[in-house]
Image (tube, rainbow, N blue to C red; front, side, top):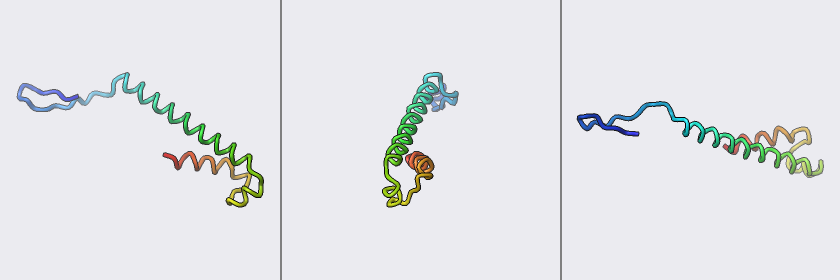
Length: 77
């Protein structure tokens, strides 16, 4: 928020964010975490449903499913 002093000079308010801004940031963070968790679970479920042959075709071992899902979530940022 900009304010002006008696000389008409623009002075920027440097106060810390208010409670409403912190709540909004927290809510956005929670929504992001929920979306990322959903993507992780969806990836794990889809890869787990594949046969060993299908996984081999895409270069993934069954033991790699969770790490591949983590990579999928972390590259979405």
